[in-house]
Length: 353
Image (cartoon, rainbow, N blue to C red; front, side):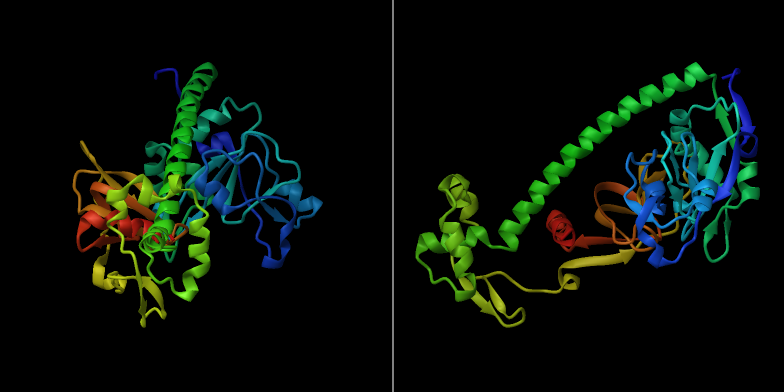
């Protein structure tokens, strides 16, 4: 790395703040880089989902061009501060959010946008941001802090090679994510069928000739039209036998439910609690550290195992992660765990609804 360049951000970029407009100026107009666009993406989406009503002056001062780096400049926690996203093309007449900073490359910059997108998201740079950010009521970055942060980069051909390799890995990760999303959608559909629509119970009731409540008759009629090849009763008789074949009226819910099924509050079947302050992430850290935005690092220690992690503050408030192994959860999350942890998957699918 002897031929790598190291410089401060103000030697490589010009800093600008974005637009702050009233709520009624959004939803129409021209492309707008939102806080979430920056927070969720290494690189800006090809098409910006949000629109803002902007004029020529605003579009000129807050334009979005290839090579621009956008950083979240304020947030509830350090973990959500300084998250970056890089523009890989010019966005005609687009502008950007006032809660972000734009870093525009100086003239004749030798930094390749695809490379710097990965650099700014690296654990190395994220630690630099956290070490220099200020915290009053909110974590924040200002121009003075940004000017002290350093960037390292190799000669341009190596930057392009690094970005190419990481891009290929990202493509593979994206494909795996799509597969996971498809599988999870299938699990959610199955959960709805079994525990919300009671399809296996209806099939069993129809097979046994049990009385169908009037409120469920329309659904029962639809089940009679479903081919046997798609019914649990016929495809997996042993599993179908785990479901009852009749319904009873539950006064608490004021609806018919499968016979023998209980009705309880979440607090009766699961344990909930808050996480703890982040541990030191040093040495040969092996345990994942979870914040409200997912895994944010590694630790030498753990405080939970086989739990659901629920984001409780910030941009990712309400996020949900199923963690089977040992982990550390931070104080911007809470945990959820069934009294019998073997049923955590049921709780995960239930909370996801």
